[in-house]
Image (cartoon, rainbow, N blue to C red; front, side, top):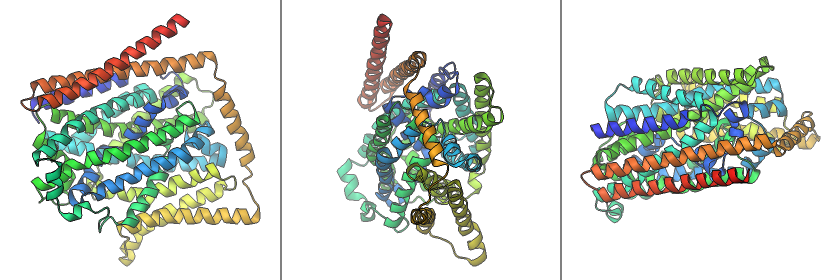
Length: 564
């Protein structure tokens, strides 16, 4: 990286951190800190969901698959688009109708406090590893780009995330997610045409790549794996507590649907753009091994990007990943504060609860950093991400999703399904190979991890239908849900005004952020030795978007003031 690249990364870091810290005075109560007052626009929430789901691991994990196998990396990621359609249509509106602040609160009311405590501890434990798996890849990218020690990169990036999430809550998370999306898209818009130019265009690329690159599946990733992974993604997207937050923080059930559909649209288009650079790099250097291929995307960027724009690309990847980590930190803090601390100390003031929320964010982040430091000793990030998904994703999230649509399942059946499948999966992952030498293939691991909880839940459901039994807690829960929705639909004028004010403030910060991002890119274009028109034009477009958005917000504020 050149000095200009380092300056660009530093400016982006200061800008994103400033935007996040600008919300430090907004989160004055639990609803604002963890649900943004239920007033997040569906477009913002959809972008935030997309960025929370996405990380630099996309470039590291699936970029490696694209380099080694080609189009199959896109096939795998398209299952995420299908998952978004399914979740947006069926699961997201059902979550919104619960009116819960967190999934743990829903479990408490639907299944009982003992079940809620068990799921809370399981979620927090597994989330530590998920958060670490988001942090490690971007630290690896920074290490490759800058030459800094990997462990130092992990610590610095983790501290960066902890700082503004603990300060600003969900408004800080979703607003900076939008800015991080803009940074990432600006970098992609520049790197893709430059990569294709390096090999004489798209037609030349398609004609020179090996035939196996155009297959939808590969030996290591057959159709059965892709289907199972798609099912896993639907369950993970629809049940992960951090993602559910994106469906419940919008105003209406229709908005919750749109969040899922918007996510699906973004994931249909973006993988094609993301995976082109590592596929191009295969033509330039086809000799990378499996571990080396994890850096194929970044190596392509270093080949073609002008000075300063490489810093933009790395900054985009850094902030895309911190977005995913930020969501995990915020929801984990919400669970600790709302579902553990508040239960022990029910008469705590809002000020005390917000302090606990911020301290728990810091504690959770520090532990995640420590785990990220150990990932390189766990077989690498690809192994950790895929194995963690197969082992825990469906057992942890599907049973709770099932209760959204079934009034028969009880806390006993749901908890039995989760505990049994987690134990069996762990035995087949660790104990059985050591004792017998048998080990699942990557496909077998994914299929088995998805199938066992589905079979168990279906068996319980059939049994309850045949015996005519229903959950003895469901009637009480249904009354709570109805009261929750009535309360949300009859917000006081003061609460509505507060939510609108926070929403307007968020848009104002986003508009200013987009403008300054565009300005920085345009200046880089003027300073670059080549491709001035592409870079400067991209920056100018984003400046225009920022100006239009800021002007519209000021106009709205002026109209509201005159009406008042």
